Amino acid sequence: MKTRILISLFALFLITANTVMAQSDQNIRQKNLQKRENVNQNRQERIEKRNPNGYGRVDNRVERRGDRIDRKQTRTDRRVKRRRGE
Image (cartoon, rainbow, N blue to C red; front, top):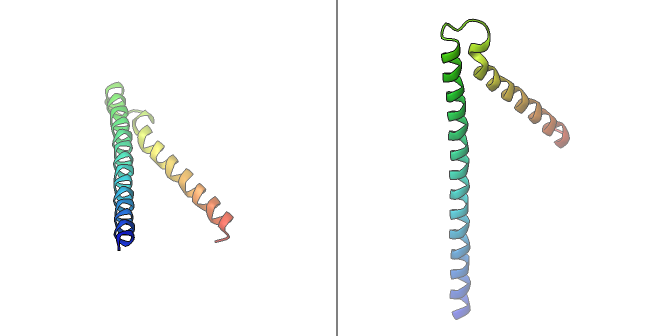
């Protein structure tokens, strides 16, 4: 009887620890995302200061960077699918 209680308590502890770790991972991911958004926003503000009328291509550098990241991601997805044989 005692062993059954101990096993169930240990299982409960493992589940709780796993949940806490997953939550902290989620928080870290959220912080990194927020940091990236702030970097992009600061960059855009600097560009607007430097080029208030939006002449040339300096204006949309952040958007182009986002597109480039998306293109890289689709390329990666394709490569992974090819490896898996999908």
